[in-house]
Length: 457
Image (cartoon, rainbow, N blue to C red; front, side, top):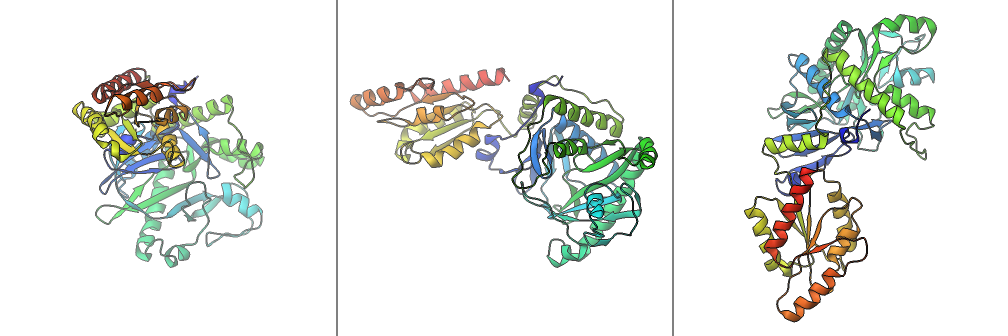
């Protein structure tokens, strides 16, 4: 039975953004951190269907990456791919590429959306003319290429013809010709290798970008159950004779289950919660496909995936593995909070000052807190505000997943000290906030809290 620690639902790491200056781009499945030269890709265990995130599946991310790594290695003679180094089963360091906003779908059989469209009378798919008289799941005389637009998260991809791809400036004409040739060669290689493992590569999606040298680079993933449909080859003929779909290894199983619950991604439909038996079944299918495609047993890590990811990034020198957001009510408190930042920097603890007033800028502060709360690396807040100090209580009170919050109010004289301490220590019930008036002590206490949180990972 998969453990909760086997699931990586997100990979927000504030240190990469606020201390290394990397751009953060969350995707349907992967979380990306990039600069001009390279990109850190963290593959979560989220799973999507009908262009919507529908849940998280244990082991999915590392199985998905492992399958892609195997295929990237087996196809690098056809086209370069973006991987520079594998840091962890769930973490890749890749070349920063400019992606083409087109998904290249290659189909060897009339299946999936193409079969559904055909049954409704459609005979042109992404500009490709389909012959009359085809049966569902029938093999095409030769594979067809049916591109789609690459929609933003939460949006639907749309069919587009090769002529429209060029006319709309999505890909230059000469590069598109290269993409078509490469995609068909990749599909042919995938078909051959899948056959050796008792599988049929039914259809798949490829994504490309422009590499550092201006050349074509294969990005994202290749021949995984998220991007491809596989059938068991020994079940194909019996299925065609019996008029049913062949047994398959892909996430189509999940799509069919969602469809049976009345969800196909249409507006107004309610997204069902995945029951435990469906989650376990999908997880098993990903692990089985990994074994069948790569020929290797899938190694289930005994280390929680979040800890693995942080350890990999720390060992590669990208993070320290802890972070202290300092929320200050005013820039006028800079003299005080600079003593905190100096102490944290002295002890090699990453931090960042954010200026927000709990009284005047509560609405602006809330989105930051919501984002920071999703951090997979340990964080401890230090709040700096005087007088009627509500900042620490505001931060702690808006944390669903409780994080350490330390009040460190500034003061200049005894009367101010008495007011600040009084307001800082009178927190509402169930809003635990520590109060430490010495800036260095506050910084040291935050580090102790972070070390304990890291130990408990």
